[in-house]
Length: 388
Ligand SMILES: *Cc1c(COP(=O)(O)O)cnc(C)c1O
Image (cartoon, rainbow, N blue to C red):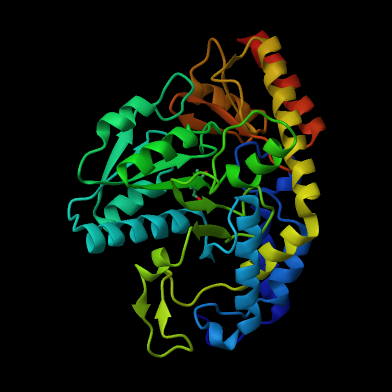
């Protein structure tokens, strides 16, 4: 490190250089990101609550109250009053917390020492991290022709060591929704936990259902659903890091509580100790500011654009992997291998991403993509189709 302090001016010159290396959502060419430009309100509130430490909430009682209020707002769109839970760093931490609670409860209340958890093959890789850290066995469930978890597979895989099923509401790669109502029935019948990972879909499915989109029930209105992950920092327009973990009651948090002797609270259930409070405040603020109407308009707009894109892709001769259920469109060129196609798109200036199962180009139609961006994208795709 430098011996003498350097001036703010000099420092910012250096930082500006590094910042200029970043892609910007406003450039309109980021097609493969589940996160988007946070709402301007989010930025202001984040800075306002910048120093809050929710690891020591006795010192930040106001921010703690805002965390609870943010959770209650999340609960209100996911059919639960006063959920237990936390605003955490993202879907990964939320899923880890859910798996930890489930594993502890199965150990302490049922004496299960070799736990198994069934997840769809389409599950986010955070469950692999959870498997590694928590020492349960992950059973990867087969998908049906719509890339959703196959119910027969789940039914046949449940045994005396099964402690939970995970259903995904809005898969990371394709935006598909597992048959959560049927999974809920299986969970209730077999007295096992159902966790719903709605990290991506949690901020659009409720609003789309409200205005008549034909999507399955997926939340706490189903009796088998005991915990849910939802990411305010994806479709919720909150700043990173903002994830939500919601449990049906406090017993799940108690199952992972440890003593925290030197703090203003004597127990902690979260994985991290010192933890960001600014995102709780910002998540609450953005949700209040937008309201149901604001999110509904955005979810509808994202779907309209997704359907515009998918219809035009078909017209140009591209192969859709599946009709989009949410705002993710996955497709392939009939004659070019996916990775090569991605490279060609990159040469045209488009930052796409690829799905792994099946292999395809994946476009997430988030808030920062305008209709004109998509028109430009389709023009390039027309040219590519003519060339190859
Ligand atoms: C994005 C995502 C996650 C992980 O969330 P992070 O915020 O990136 O940690 C988990 N599950 C699903 C379904 C996701 O789409």
